[in-house]
Each structure stands twice: as C-alpha cells, then as structure tokens.
Image (cartoon, rainbow, N blue to C red; front, side, top):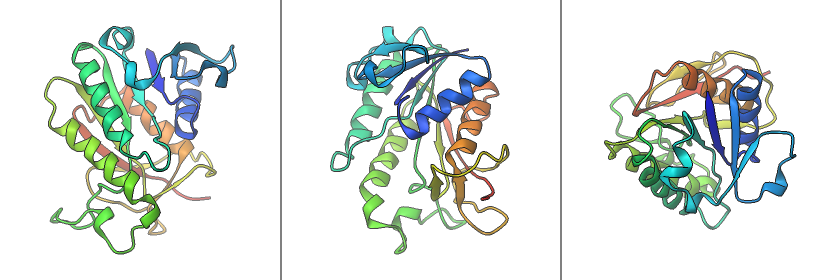
Length: 213
C-alpha cells in the first residue's frame, strides 16, 4: 500500500513508519522540513499540513495524521484536522487514520463522563486532549471522508517495549491484565498497521492497551 505519514519525524509517526516499512509498504513522509529525515529513509512530500490539498493526498491509499501541536498551540489539532477533512473530501479513495488521544474516552458504561472530565486528569494535558476530542467530533460529523480515529491508553509510553500484542476497545477506557490503562508506542504502531491492512473501524474510533514490561 501507499501510505503517507504526516508527522513522520515525531515519536508516534516514526514508529508507525518503521512498522509500515518493515511490512513492505510504500511510505512517504509528509513533513514541513525534509532536512529532519535521512534521505534514504522514505520518499518525501515536503509540505506543511495546513497547505495540503486533495491532489496531494490522492496518490495514497492511506494517510496517517500523527501531527503533534506545539505546547501553547494545542488548537492546531483542530485546525489541522479541518484542513485534512477538506482535502480528503477530494481524495475519496484515500483513508485517513488519526493518531488521537485518550482524553475523549468514556470512563463509565453509560458513556456520560469522559476521561478528560475526571478530577484525576492531568491539567498539563488538558488542552491537547480537549482539542484532539474536538477533532474527533469534527470527523464524526463528516459524511464524505473515510476515517479511523485511534485513541491510545491513558499512559502512552514512548519508551515501552514492543510486545507484539494488544487488546482493543471502542469508546470506553480499557485496562490491561494489571488494571492499567497502558500502551507502548511500538504496540500502538502495530495496531495502526493492522487497521490499515485489515480495516475494522471505518468511520469510527477504537482504543487499545498492551502489557507493560
């Protein structure tokens, strides 16, 4: 498959690219600054996310949005998401996979309370989580785009090991066998590629956990 990765130099994007490359997919890094990538790594589309158009995305089977907004500019998650939605409307054969957040997951069976609304939710992550949640709402209100929003566990560990397995949920926060909402970036990347290769959540969201070391 031809896969474009926005944010390919970031923590999540780089591991998703690595997983995709190891599975034999044709990867293009969609980056604002090509100098951050080694020449031999992937094909490169040097373009700011806010300048992407349908003609840029039509060449891909799947586009992964692993964009990370800088601190203090968390609203860019929403702005970038809306730019992508508009671009994807003209790339009807391309699927959009969004690396989301855990804050919008529900913590009760009645689905009335989201993780971000609980007293324990860390204030330093509130702005990011709130804007990622708005991005999900925008996607849910869009009919003409094929998308999947993937929420990691509450503890999304960039240093965690690749266990090679994970458990999935849908819109509610789930925990692993130790009772922890945990997933490593490496296992998250596996789940992204599994969904790309075998779509289960077209126009929907899922979450996942893996075992810690």
